[in-house]
Picture 1 (cartoon, rainbow, N blue to C red):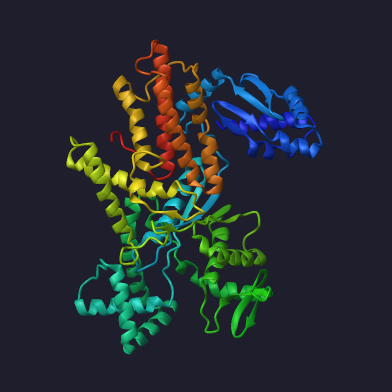
Picture 2: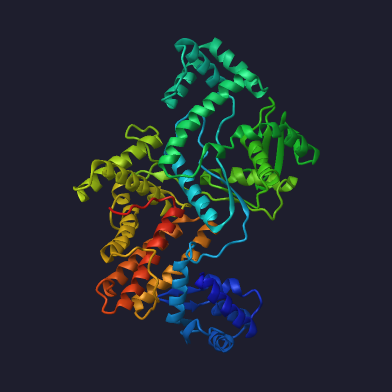
Length: 576
């Protein structure tokens, strides 16, 4: 149930009958407020200004046309022209009961779209580091949310698996195998890459062989392709361990590396030339874009093929967008790439649109994100200034969480503590990121993210177990209650109204790619449940009917918290 959408539609219909323009609904929806179990329509002000009417006069006219039979107990005008709608508690109770009995918690099915989500994007022969965290977990939260709503979601892990460095890596892998006469595990990918680069710089014969391997690889040589595939497989095997640990839904079948588009590049360059979009400039093939200007105010030139015949990231991204529309049949494409790449993507997409590769009806959306910073406000690094490996970060999260949960649960077995520490520690790292607006930088702070108070994963996970504990004490299964649900107290009405805003919240996250909105909603919901639990006795309720009714509100709270956290990729536990 999307209360805001329902009431906004009702108010809009009444506005149109009162003489407002037919497109007034967005203004009503955007300015509406639902709080304390009631709804306030503020869009009257903007519409009245358009009509040249006094807001109160328009509000009075709207009320005469407003049909809220069975939904509202009272409607009144407040202030300069706000319309306050007091929701009928019987209607609220009926909607909450319906949500509780449905597996999707009352969230309506959507018209499914094919949505491609580009996220994570690690590089081959390099270990994932903290720079991959935001793309990976924000992108996966979007994927989970869109999938829950019923869309056909295609995960696209745009792995860096192509380029001139692969000649060097293949040559070094060959050298290692020849010297050691055994399969190379590449346990330390970073060390492998550094040693390959050092050998390339110091050994001219090796460098010459490496350059030859680049040409052979790009020409489809079977030996080089086999060695290249080995590097990709080893890297993605290690990355999969990280994904599984992070509770991220990416698998090996979601890899769509840069190599996938390699065969498309010559045809794209030729086509852009044929369409008159690309020209030769100083030996390179360039597209000049009036939409972007250089420092001299001239159209910016975007190189799509270097004079030595090599292609650039822009060429690959043009092919990538074309492939996603033509081959994957995307209705919408989302890119979770950091904000520093914005101009690059906009230039590639401008060329894509001009060439007619993707129609304007298919959105190409850059869901940009800021950087992860240390407490000093600088990019998050090791104490020595090095890049922090993601595996090391997750190990530290586990160790810090283990210390906390061991203090809180001295009676718990070691195996249970280890499992709980993993859920709490990984959840803390993810939630600390997801709860911040993705468009801004954020400070990585162990103490804050592992706190059991405030908008943190440990607090939310504990809030969920606290609701479940009510059912343990009652000796009742959370799914077994079949009794009337009634709302008589203000705290009950506030909790029920917020529960019914789950659909509105998840729809907004899906539209804007903003998981922090879901975090804020769940945190608010947990706070409202605490107030309800404190002021509305459940287990000690005087009437059995009241006890059963309130247990159902608690059940819907538990299910909503769990489902909301699941859309974020945050695991829950039964006890903490």
